Length: 634
Image (tube, rainbow, N blue to C red; front, side, top):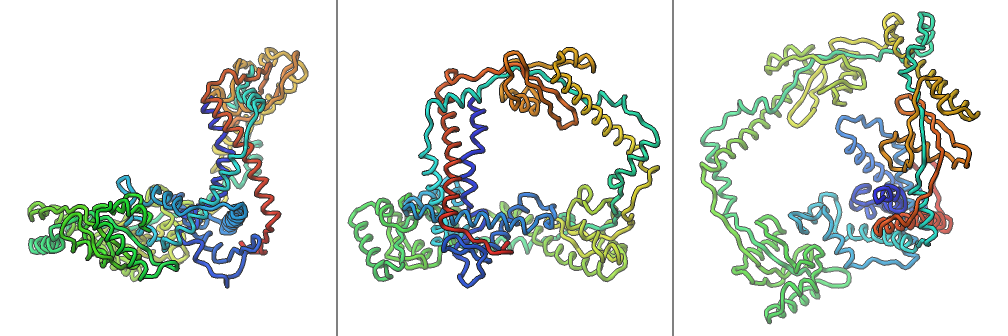
């Protein structure tokens, strides 16, 4: 019962909330709401708020890249329709603006502390189970986002979530509603079904040459051969040349010495800090004064971690008492690093340090260092690394040479001989692609390009993976054509028999249904076709022993009267036709549910009601604020 309730609740209010919140990090990216200027063309207005063309185009681009990433590397980007993407993105942008206005009108706010807690808990910014401020700054910087811009976008998401949650929490259910829902979900039905499998009608299909030719003429498109090619190609692989890379003893020694110069004992330090930000409300001088005052309190014995929790403006570390974790050199910005590594003893606290982030007090918590590894210990790793570096450099040279040879020569023979490559063959395959290597869309597009297919040139060097490039040319071409009847006679016969056997099964099921509706006995109808009824008394909605469509049809039929039966039919995916009969329906009883099941059911009801209220609220916002979509905007 619990699982049944969970399955039903997935599609209601909870999903509406998720659909309403257009997640900044995945759809529009960091900075999506600070990257636009008011001079851009407007594509929509929500009340007085404008949605710009740049905002829409950026959303379409990010949505496209996200979908392509989910669909895999071999998908054809042309399959994605920018107009459809534009409609979806614009609808999401409009909905987001509506909900933000609704939240603000309702007086909802998100505190800075709540934003801090959310950031610290986000998996994107955690490493080894805890918030990592370096990762936080790295992820934001990689996406072109600043911490203040990210906080503003996150605050908007939290506002919308707060609004949706508030609407959902106002919903309540009565005992009668709970009982009615239990009666429906726990309902049992006595059902029987008669299956008409097309396989059982194959022998009844009349087959002759005239029928088959007529079928062929009516389905010519099914017997059309697409254009296909056979290609010859050469493949250059970086892994194949790595063993040929020679590494001298001097090179190994030089690499080791460079490592040792950078090693410097590999000292790592764990630091805590208190950040006093500089902003419109606080000047640099005021920040320095506050930092100095805090340092004096620390020197007098107050706890550094507690002061960090109370006063630090770094949301990532403040909750952890300012702890930044263990780090080596080149981790922090230069002024911060110099101050940290100038501290002599654990527990020492720096003077105020100015960086682009504000003013810091830095406390040295721990120092860890290790002895450098010996040359013999590092030798295998150094050898592997230098071979890899050499292979990459050589591969780059060979790729350029292959690309030049492919352009300058009329076939693959000379490139193969000069570079020691094997000429291989693949195909035939159509524009839909082939198997293995030639499922790659870039290779397929190259094979069917006008330069390669029509003019007979070699392709350019095409990258099909990390360290793998291919040059191809068309060896054989078979143009698209209508296949003759004699060529596809067996295929036509198979298709004709399949279609006709399905038709006969469908007609038999329709006749059986009509007879039952006219009052015939179930045993009589089954006997006419040599079939047996299958029966399930006490059928429930989640009984997986019964075919899903049969179960759905059984519960879609109306309640039978005392002396009657409900009858219907349904088609299965394999072409079978099924006649379904329901003879009795018994309501479920909420008294059979345990406490947890009742709570799940109550949540389901609240979600259903919340869905209705949320939709009504959105419609009211749209009506009150007004939404204007510019023609041709998407």
